[in-house]
Image (cartoon, rainbow, N blue to C red; front, side):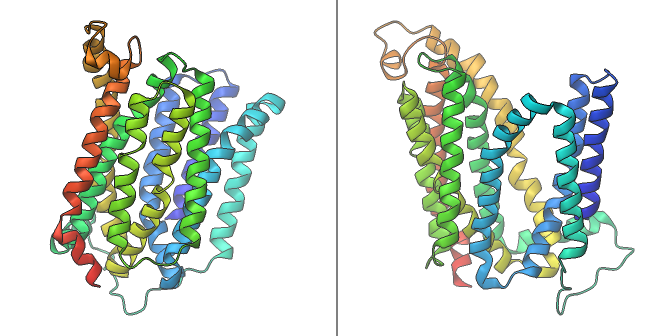
Length: 355
């Protein structure tokens, strides 16, 4: 499954190159290519999670979870830098060539360099079993395992708040006094370095006594720092500090969540459950992106434009473009904290600590 998805993703890159070289490449082609890549990632991710569970001894779950986040952080930091450099020196053809070379290396490594053991004592799935039957099994597991289900709902709610943040973040930095493209790049670089540091920390720390407490506290810390600093900050320094504090604990949260799910979900169910989990946990992200843009443009910016100079909102968030986005960050800060405090009291989630 992973090899097939990687191959199809590489094919979309080749299609993009052919269209570009023939002068036919248009914006809507890029949308379709991204849809294809997104679909491949969606199918590949549950398969990769199952593979990691089978390869790793349980004692290394947290350490490797941190290392995987470390790899992702390095990609986020280095990819734009290297892509810009190669683009300027050699052009898009070389970028595509590098992309395809990395695909060949990854394909060869996965196909011939990694042995994924069969699960011991697992039921074999009959070949004639229908897709919807497998989906029902994943949904049925979550109905029985309320702790895992509520944990997924917790993350889905956080993703909604975080995606509203993602939609409003560049608009505010680019439009506020003191903001610019350079400031946006600087804050994004600090966020990348923060996740990098957090990933190293997650890889080095010992297993905590309470993984649920770590998850709740990390998200509470993130939600109660960055959004407030973005709301009230007026300079790149404050925005950078907010970005650093907001993301430093996320890899630690993610690695502990990863351990809980791997230990709790039976190996023979992980593919189905992870697929259903992805549908539930991540469907709020596009909803949040849509809401973020809509709320900034249609609600918060117009509200701030109507305020008088001595208004308390003007004193809190400033005036002009970007002040509405700052006001939105103030609102979603309380929303994020509220979500964390609500699920922190969920007894079904805390029952996961008992095993």
